[in-house]
Image (cartoon, rainbow, N blue to C red; front, side, top):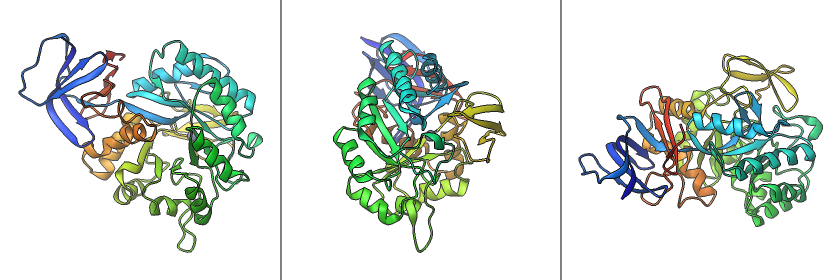
Length: 384
Ligand SMILES: [Zn+2]
């Protein structure tokens, strides 16, 4: 007997758009996806999706905070607070992302992530920790705190990873020891990602030859494209197999840059992220990031001191809506970039990111007009 039959679902999954479909769930996995008009076998529970979109649960691999909390706050409850907000925006999994801080504070944050996992992950599931910094270029800080910037140190990363597995490290590949650091990350199953970087295209090429294939928030806090030095932005366009995170709030990237990226870069190399900070899910007002004062006004979070963008208040469901409106691409193509591409990179492409037989029943239900989140299921269990 099937556990759950979700009927009248407008299923949107990479490469397919099926209106009035049914999703059958057994033991937390998708048992089958039936097209409109198919007989529905009897199930323990039937859920009527009411014609809403049903998409693979989003994977946000770069998020610092939401709902007033930051992953690096001293309170252990920060991780759960962020996980709850992430669930509310349709993420079934996320990578809690740290800031450039001292090792002790980072270790405490990673310990909090471990505690959330051990307690059973009440809300969005944890993919692993994303360390953003501290090994960045002091000339490309963005909203990272210069007091804690240091040179790449794989031993520190491995100490954190022993507490709770580290998924990804954002660092500046041109920093001393960057080449060795890239190799050691890969040896340890950690994604090395170049970001907050002044690397030239030539320096990027050297990192690429060492196996680096990921750029953190593409275009933001990296060398711009110039016709005699194409920088990291040019390298991102030149190397189609490099995965690029993008923040689609129409602020970090203007609508034309979002159009350009989707027009030029291979779809399978684009990873949509939020890079959200604590003010996400809250009204405009004063906030903070990594000990620096931030003002949120008109949906833009900026440092009070110099006006630099300080992360976003973006939600994944809004990012999807923005890209759909800006590019005009079919949702069944864009939806690769909210979960499936991330799952492939993380070696989870057999269980996450698609609505197909055998995949985890991690499902997000969206209003087809507003893209508001109407429901979230993790392994077939209704969580929202
Ligand atoms: Zn970030």
